[in-house]
Length: 89
Image (tube, rainbow, N blue to C red; front, side, top):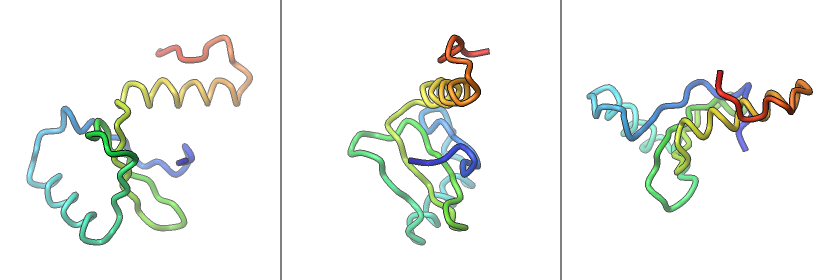
């Protein structure tokens, strides 16, 4: 589980162009051991987080839209706004 406060960015791997900078980033992250594959399914999103002062790249089969909905759901519940759970604004 990654805490919201630790997330730096979430990228959509299905829509991210294979730009040189992204290729270099993933090559370096793999070489340095920063990549964590969440499941055996093809990744739909990439979550860059800082955990214990170390950068970690999580490759997730969950789409960025679903991650957004889930994050808002958790935020709404933690602030006592369960009636808005899952709404995108």
